[in-house]
Image 1 (cartoon, rainbow, N blue to C red):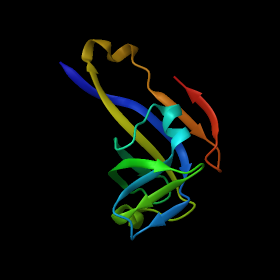
Image 2 (image 1 turned 45 degrees about the horizontal axis):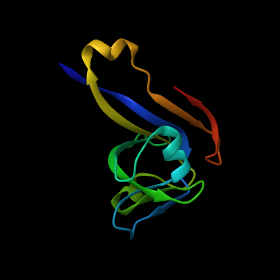
Image 3 (image 1 turned 180 degrees about the vertical axis):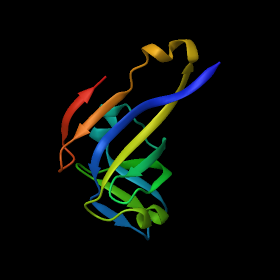
Length: 117
């Protein structure tokens, strides 16, 4: 049997913009995605630390330091909010106890503080 587990997370990213008039998604600094093993158009869950909102969207490439919520997602956070951005994968249940996700800890300016695997 397969189970769903955390694949990767960007921990405590700072929202840099919220663009209501964009088609939708979240723009994420491409270097942060690379460090976490996340991919363009991959589904992500966004967990807003400031207001408790939890929602799903997909990644589009962003500029250095950018974490921008676009379209309807722009209503879920304000500039400066701290968010946790997570992706999931499925693995065989028998491998679950040895599984380790990639966790990218971020500074307030969205630079990488540490990467844990």
